[in-house]
Length: 96
Image (cartoon, rainbow, N blue to C red; front, side):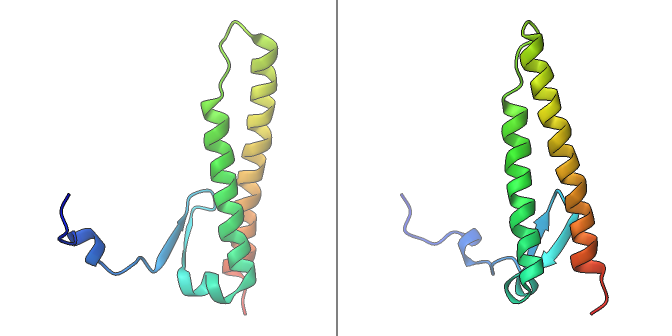
């Protein structure tokens, strides 16, 4: 194990957060300063985790009832993802 710091550790931390569900980026300072932006960051993270969990739980085709429930859950998660886009618009595009 090396005791020399890597180049990666010497970089400045990122000042921008990528929100994949909201399809936006926001500054860390804005997220820390504005409660509505922090809510957007948290909701986006939760939605992304839920979508990835859902994808990992796809049931086999031989279980049609389970697949039906899985697809219904996917529709609900996609609707939540759409609400994330609307929330991002309200939080980030609204005039101050």
